Image 1 (spheres, rainbow, N blue to C red):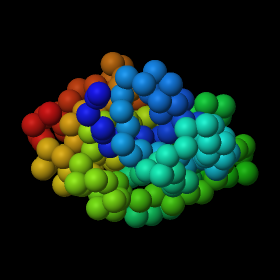
Image 2: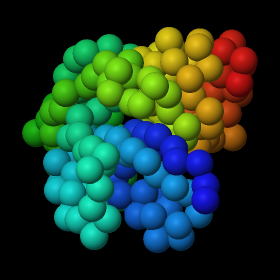
Image 3: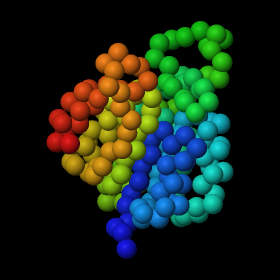
Image 4: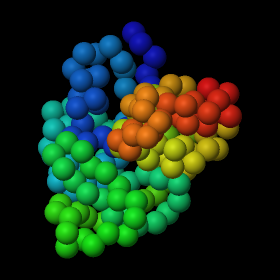
Length: 173
């Protein structure tokens, strides 16, 4: 039997990674916290995970970032991206505003304040997620981080690998 873990998914979309882990049964998820800011994706996420009932499965229709705020997002098919600059919303289709909360606000709800597996898929905002959970990183309370990075220094879709590496190395990762 595998060790039971706490899984946190920031940018869960419609729950594909969580469902795959549950289907394959290679990871024993004791508790899961799935965060998805897009209301349409969130609705689909909630429907999708109904086939994996668990008392310790929590979903949140919010964004995760550095500090409490509100942010404007743009949704396009499988990708929801936080808009960086004030934009004329009338020119952008599929925009919505969402609450942003730092992940540290949820740390007390995680068993032993510990995350065994943190998945981060936030289309270029990974560093703000880390800023909002710096205390757990500092205390080495996150065992593994699973994320998409970019290898193009000028890319905007993912955070450049070297920036992620530099931040995580400060915490001993």
